[in-house]
Length: 405
Ligand SMILES: Cc1cc2nc3c(=O)[nH]c(=O)nc-3n(C[C@H](O)[C@H](O)[C@H](O)COP(=O)(O)OP(=O)(O)OC[C@H]3O[C@@H](n4cnc5c(N)ncnc54)[C@H](O)[C@@H]3O)c2cc1C
Image (cartoon, rainbow, N blue to C red; front, side, top):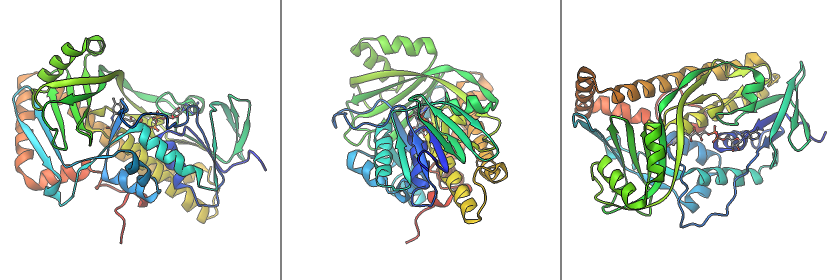
């Protein structure tokens, strides 16, 4: 019957589109509902203000889904090294992909490039219907399925509804899951900049008393910055004239890349930590930022969201093979058990990291400087940190595992 689906995914952003691709080719009928579909009307010259540091695990997912090529044809920026240092105390750590026998640590990719490549991939998948522009208005769950009402008046029926609708998730709101977390006293200012010296395909991150400042390398020589600082400073920096902005930025990055010669566009995002108590309810599952938001300091937010998507797809497809009802909460709990612990671990470590680097108390400053110095010298410890940050550790879903040739 028309408008009858097995899975209705709300949100065709990076995580929702990846989930839909992962369910592609199965016998499930899948709908993806998206309010603001990806569009391709940007000039190749411009760099999206929102970029993501994509781990090797996420790259494996995109490759397996057939979307990596669409990203590579637009712009992907591999980075081979990462330099992290503390403004208070001077300790530093350098990560080099060669130390773990890899060609690079990951890629910086514009969010719009990721979203568009996945969205385009969906066009050629027969069992997936893209419904756009349309937003979820409400839904009701009964014993057999879910009735959905969209804001264009359309009604859908499905066995499972998935909230991939980001941090202000409507699915989460209607499902009534409680959410824990807090606002950080930081906003992230993002911008694209040009620098006097080459970024050397290195991601640079300096921990300042107010928060971390990251320079992420773009393949054409520009850098995308994420400057986390007190909300009032972020707002003031966003309003500064170009020369004063470049001067302040150059000072905060310790002039490692020489002078900042130009800035293109600026945006400010409040930062918060959020985690829902339950990823699943009868006939409802949450993935990506709908389930959790994390500080961007280690660039893990969308990466853990993509692992959610790949894991949920694996669980649902196992359910299909076993002829189970895919909306059954006992089946969906496999997904929750798989992802919740790993996400909490990642969120907890990032939060501890953020707090440790935010502290100016002498003992904590000393401990973190010692910690950085030790980690930089002990090769097995450093390799373990790198492998984890590259997404190569942990209990990975099949799609995220390195391909076997
Ligand atoms: C400054 C900053 C830097 C970051 N850097 C990194 C990084 O380097 N690496 C990294 O891994 N992560 C990073 N993140 C985090 C990352 O951006 C998020 O984790 C990611 O965007 C989450 O993707 P998502 O698809 O779950 O949600 P979203 O990107 O929020 O997408 C949700 C989608 O749902 C749609 N939608 C919403 N409501 C509805 C509705 N009612 N009906 C239909 N559609 C709806 C929206 O239009 C949107 O397309 C960063 C975050 C910030 C703030």
